[in-house]
Image 1 (cartoon, helix red, strand yellow):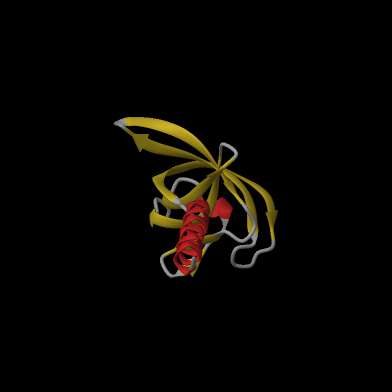
Image 2 (image 1 turned 120 degrees about the vertical axis):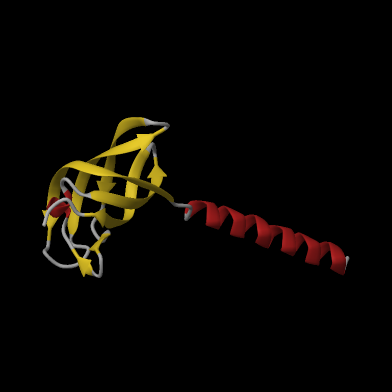
Length: 116
């Protein structure tokens, strides 16, 4: 009896932890930001919200993607924080997750700046 209860608890814990980890899965994409749309900005780290269009290479073809940027998304250029409008024309790496068919940014790092 004790072994059945213990085995059931272990199975339940594994099932719940696997489900929880699946919710935190993130993908990465790299590309050039072609446009940005600012819906809110508090001018503090993570204080901009909006969206951006990204030209990303996929299987040798350039694919344009839309990425939503929620309030609180960290945007970095090296060790410094930058803001959403400053990303236009830059090569970036975006960690994101998909929710209801939309890509939602978790963090954005400038890889190569085309602006001085």
